[in-house]
Amino acid sequence: MRAGILILFTSALLLLVAAGCGSQGVVSPTPSKVVGSLPKPVLLPVEPAFKLKGDPTAGKAIFLKAGCVGCHTLAAVHATGTVGPNLDQVKPDYRTATGRVTLGGGAMPSFKSQLSSQQIADVASFVVKATGGTP
Image (cartoon, rainbow, N blue to C red):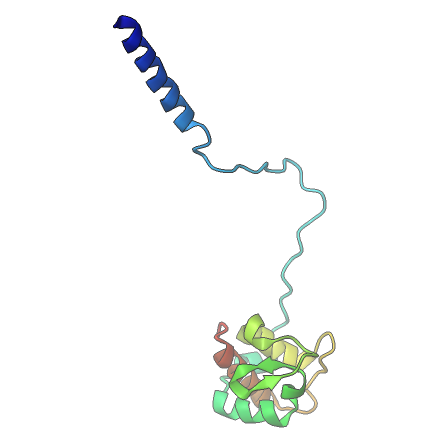
């Protein structure tokens, strides 16, 4: 009888110890030394349009008229361009949108000679509102 209790007690103890194994989940090693550096986010300079309050309604008309739909995808205007980024996915903030429209970048040309600062603010405001980006 004593042997049975001892076996039962030992089995219960082993079961408790085994249940505790792996309770911390999957662990991945943390590097002790980082080689190189992490890329820093690119902040575009504050352009004059950034300081203006844009009108999203006016911006929609400018977005359509300026040819933005030819390069960008944006569901709000049924645009399906593939040359530039999909704005619905990127969800640019207001600073990025005003900077990119003003200065251009990548394949995108600068629009500072075609659009006024107010028009750039309007387009940026429309894009931010349409995509749910940060105003």
